[in-house]
Amino acid sequence: MAQDRIDSTVPHSARMWNYWLGGKDNYEVDRVTGDQIRELHPGILDYARSDRAFLGRAVRHLAGEAGIRQFLDIGTGLPTAANTHEVAQSIAPDSRIVYVDNDPLVLTHARALLTSTPEGVTDYLEADLHDPRTILEHATRTLDFDKPTAIMLLGIAMFVADTDEAREVVRTLVDAVPSGSYLALSHTITGPGLEDVDAAVTFWNSVGTPKLTQRTVPEVAGFFDGLELLEPGVVSCARWRPEDDGRGEPEDVAFYCGVARKP
Image (cartoon, rainbow, N blue to C red; front, side, top):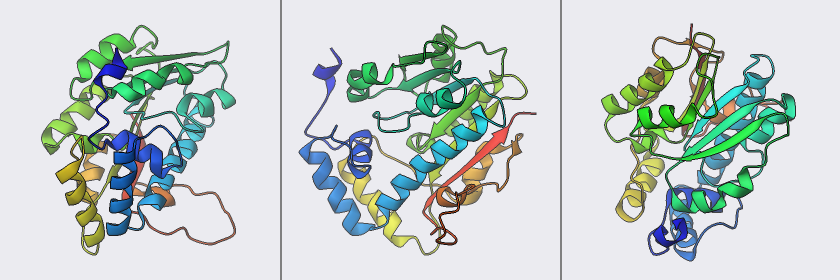
């Protein structure tokens, strides 16, 4: 059983992300490590929340203005509020969503996530981003890759250490879907002035799993090569089409994102 494969003695990124977002599907080791990372990088909560808010805005655009009805969400993480299928099906009830993750705790909670509208479909696949061809093969049980599909890679490509391999994975996924499909991707960054972020990542990689790789903004932009980036391009998640809350320009976070269309 998946529960038998859960190691509650080692902090895990999906559980810690859940903790930062206010969830309860985590262990003491995740909370302790999460608090230690917050001490190194106090803005981590903003960056977790900004990435989640980006997901909602991106899916609303894709299901609404772009007319997408199929979503392949890889590295979905633990269920929280406003999951991809909930956002998409609130706009287009006939949307079909396949979630992919390789974490056993996510698998044990997948049943709570599989609550599709009667008109649509929501499915779950246990697989690893390092093996995109297996993901594509099994996703065809639910999705028709002859029709435009949104590939969602939020906070997941950073767990593929080699940049060339990570780009090849993304390219394999994008090559499998037709013109008019979309890629939505977010990724932690590094650069001048982000020493607190770098320190937090170094600490995480020394104690937790899976290990993550930071990339520069140009390296993140490279994932969209050959695609048509939507405005405003590759930007901080907080600044991708933010809603006007009357508080002015949102604060930048060290988590960058973009949405692009396959021509």
